[in-house]
Structure formats: structure tokens, C-alpha cells
Length: 297
Image 1 (cartoon, helix red, strand yellow):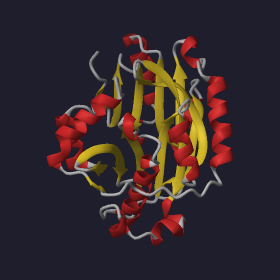
Image 2 (cartoon, helix red, strand yellow):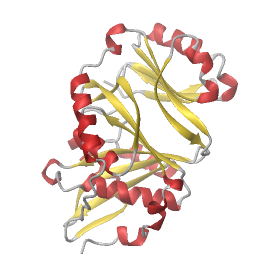
Image 3 (cartoon, rainbow, N blue to C red):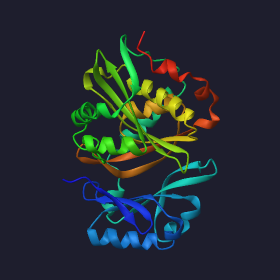
Image 4 (tube, helix red, strand yellow):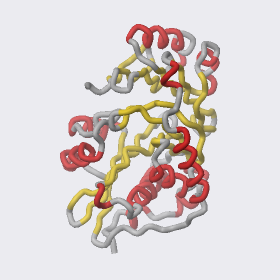
């Protein structure tokens, strides 16, 4: 099945397609606010999509809430450290509104609460290297992503997509062990809101259990702080112990759950939203970026 497409919708930006069976309002233009809710519902109905997922400012939300959208998650002081962002859901199919992993989701969150005070410090393996990826790396990056994810919401297993996003707004981070790429992540920046989505974490199965995602996330925070990014967030698979624990340990705040939101590995999964205000976390600013990009001791 083809990946969902990203295109302009009026002056706003949406992603849509049968892959995720939804419309995702990625960026809502202020001049479209009043017409967007009805227009998106009409499009979703016409194309047979079962969900609309909208990311809007608190100020833009009333027209959506008035016609049946519900707030599934929110991040306070998101836009230039002032206005909140809301993640809204509208379901055209009642079945999609029902979580298939509710019990496991709660078990994950219980474990996260227990782990939030865990100050375990992970060390990179000896002779490893952590660095920002370059255009020369995209072929091996695409291969790693393709090996780890059977399906994914964005074509991260396509070198052309990696080149395009690397040249515009995404910084990719990798860990190499004995010259082999073993773990990846990405920081998807939005200069206008001074925010970044920490995402696309991927570790080869044989190298899991070493805290590589946590090591990557720490390096990402330092780099984003140096670029004057104010807020970091992630949308993590709700049934995944590993990634949710990683963000809980690193001081992120849970702010809601998106039900059956994303097609990952061939099925819809609930997604947890976590956030952290980097500019209000002095510990991030005190870390030394240069040390994080040296070879392992």
C-alpha cells in the first residue's frame, strides 16, 4: 500500500491516505480555522477514512470541538512557550475509537511511574560513535529503518525521503559500533513554534537492551537546546514499554493518548504523547555537546 501523501489543504497542511486510514491536520493556517472542521469531515467521509487527527492551537480549537472533535492530548506553552497545542480526534467509525490494547497501555504507564525516578546512566559501548547523520549515510539509514519496521507512517526506508527531510527540517542521529550503524533517531524541528518531535527511534534487535535510545535522546536534547528549541515532544506507541520508559526516565510529562492513531507494522496502535520544556530544564543546557559526539571510551 502506498504511503499517505502530504499536501496543501487551503493554506493548511494535511497528510492523508488509506495507509493510516485517516486525515492528519499537521499545520492549521489561522485563515482556514473556521472552515477546516467541516471541510475535513467532508473529505474524510468522501474518501472513506475512519479518523481525523488534528494538531491545532488552543485558540483554533473551538470550531473543532463544536462539531464533535475531542481533545486526546495537549502540550501546554507549546507555541513560542505561550499557547498550548491540542491533539484532537474525530472518528467516523465507532470501532476505531475503541482501544485494542487498553490493559497493556495501563501496565506500561504503571511501569513508567515506577521508572521515572530511575537515574540509571547508560554508557555507549566501547569503540562506538554517536554523531549527526549526513547525506552520505542515507542508504544505510534507509536499510536499517526497513529492517526494523515492516510498515511506518512515513517512508523512512526511502533514501530520497531521508535526503529531502535532512535538507529541510529533520536532524538524524546515529550510533555506529565497529563501523556498523546499529541505532537511529530523528529530531523533526518546527522553527516557527520552536518545537521538536523526537521520533523514529530504531535499534537493530541484536543491540537492544543497552539503553541506546536513551543515549540518543540525551544527545538530541543537547543539540536541540543549542539550536534554541524550546519544547521537545514525542508520540510514542502506547503498548511499547521501551520507548515510554525512555521518555519517562528522561523527565518527560505524559499528556494524553491518541486512540488507534497510527499504522505501525501493519496494525493501528494507540500513541502516547510526552513533552519536555527544554528551555526550562537547566540540566539540558549544562551538558557538553562535544563530549556526546566523541567515540566511546
